[in-house]
Image (cartoon, rainbow over all chains, first blue to last red; front, top):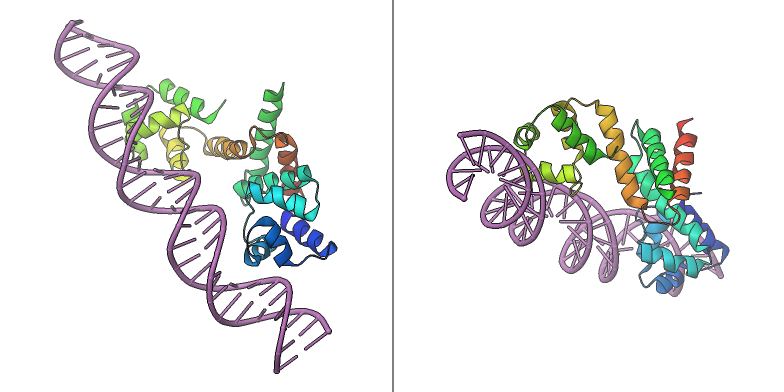
Amino acid sequence: MILSELLKSKRETKNLLLREVASMIDTDTALISKIEKGDRKPTREQIDKLAIALDIEHSKLLKLWLSEKVYEDVKGEDLAIEAVKLTLKRLKTEQE
Amino acid sequence: MILSELLKSKRETKNLLLREVASMIDTDTALISKIEKGDRKPTREQIDKLAIALDIEHSKLLKLWLSEKVYEDVKGEDLAIEAVKLTLKRLKTEQE
DNA sequence: TAGATTTAGACAATAATTGACAAGAACTAA
DNA sequence: TTAGTTCTTGTCAATTATTGTCTAAATCTA
């Protein structure tokens, strides 16, 4: 599940209007709409607030958000998978 | 091996001066110096030119470059590894 | 249709990145 | 040492990307 889809489905499950979520995030409906359509990426602060507003596990949302940042960096590249694997190796190494 | 290190060691192996590499990349020595110290990230175009100038396999350099972009996105995050793994899964899935 | 919700477009404000310059630091050779 | 060369650092304007907000149009609902 993609971030935007999760946000939209969660909002609908909770029967919230864009305007209600927007006010909790301190922005307007247009921005929330765009986020739900994937036209805009939420900022990290917005992720924090969205997790609360929509009652989503924060780490789940943050992971999705980070993952999509990564995805945007490499999508369409022939070397995408290899590059990501390399990063993973690096992260694992420095974890020790 | 990190991108900046590779670039510097390759240049030294080939006994090139910063000014020589700089001219091949169409920039000045300051920028090359910063790139070799990791203070600046090369642009994609610069990666292309650096591969030629330093006689490095282009895909190797590009992979490192992409990998470091990814790394910058997630470094320091508790969820870094998990997020990258998730991206990898997504990339593999859409590859099919 | 009227009223509400959602979406799309545009644009200024803000932030991030880049290239370039100049001056200083480090090194080398005589 | 000193002169000449190479490398590094700091700064800053220019470019580019991102963000928030406004307005109006589209879509939905009763």
